[in-house]
Image (tube, rainbow over all chains, first blue to last red; front, side, top):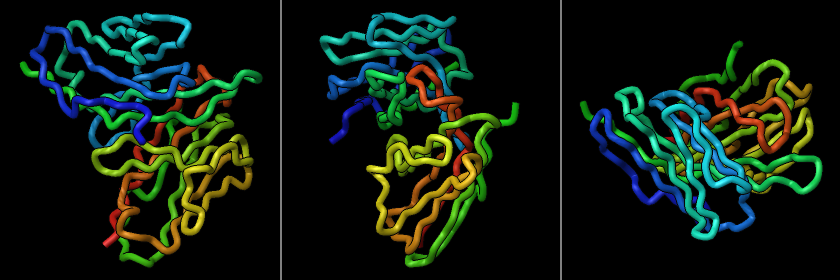
Length: 117
Length: 115
């Protein structure tokens, strides 16, 4: 049972345009969401995150939007650059009520973003 | 700052053999994770350590997988005996503390092929 779903295995976008990567989740207990980027033969690297108390978080060219009622989040990259070509993983976690600890992340299957010149 | 170190980079074994992977987290990071990433899937958590104690090993196939972090620094993950379906990339990650906002830093992984 996949709790974090990325339904688009791949996405092709022209350089300079907007890339939109989507992610859906089923577990309503998830309250912290992250995007990781992965290049071939490397480990995933953290990109951006959002807490469930927010609906938007922006960092430079990257913006993550969260729609809790729809259990949906999206990553927008504007403008898209060739170096953005990578696999993007959506991940979610459940924070504990006390102590602030968290469990390990639950990842989606990833979306391979290809930026075309 | 040095990243998460993993070795070996690649490993090819036959089914029913045993194999071990090693991870050295970022200095000072108390929390360490092992993830399994099968081709075409996202990483799946196998085990989480806080210092040298296990926080979560609910998804670790304990009949064949074992992991330890004896001194709260380095960690080893062992598979004995290996099965064909264990072919995957094994990723180690660490974070400074086990707090919800702390991001994970991943190593490059060990790619295991079981023939």
